[in-house]
Length: 369
Image 1 (cartoon, rainbow, N blue to C red):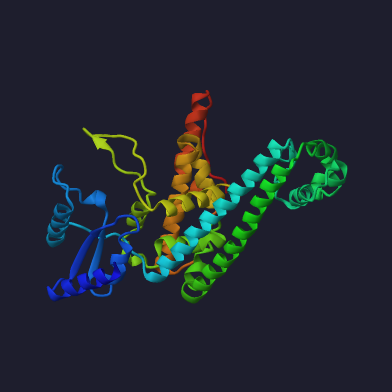
Image 2 (spheres, rainbow, N blue to C red):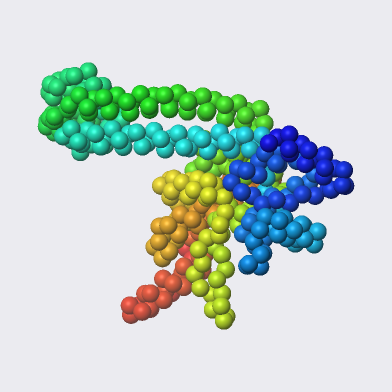
């Protein structure tokens, strides 16, 4: 209990303790950290890094082992961001969970419509677009006239009114309408919470991290999700000596797997899963943005490394950009889609000459005026 932790704090102070080390176990380290952080230098340690000899596993032995490592200077504390960043992180992670909840409810509604023989998703690309929502609302009101509902379609969907009329022929029962109403109500309530969350996130950004937020938005694929970057890795890049340290902490750099002088393929390291996933999302967006350096980087890797590895590599590039933007307070500079070609110009010329020579041509390369 909290009073027990306060007595622990007093007991440690009476014995001249200055440093405290403890393992990170879910969220159970947070109450202890909250009480001790203002008096001691608290080091939160990854349990994977301080394993003891097998066969000596008790709570007391673990405490003695941690104490011995701390006194010997053989452990390093985990990165614990400031209180404002921790609060912002709670908000952004909760926001992501709620977005996933809304997506699940949309899939559930689509499933119920299929169960009711309504093939709306076969004709409409997004059943929760303008036309889709109008049609679903009419179905909830009990309207079963397919031609009238097809007339409610908007935009390009009006060209497919005949298909839409056929798709809306089904057998909707009272059970289906009840389930869809429940899902729609859940979606509306969740979206209201999302609006409040977004407002709270923007208040924190505006009051504490406006400059960093605006700088991160200069990265084309990041835009309005820059608050997630700030929430996950903070704004003080002095905690990471180089961008490689940050990439390793985020889990965006490959581990080493070498034995007998042979280097084997290695998977990415363990790291911040939330940051890792959002960087991969940014990389996917960047791979679709024409006329950018990040897209050209993705295109140069995807053919020989595959989509997943190419996305991780582009996400790594975005992370390096974020590091330098936050460290030196400079905006992102777009290098352009032809940067890689210019950077490896000589190698590209040699490769093309080699291919043409293999096809039986004699090639002489002269640079144009």
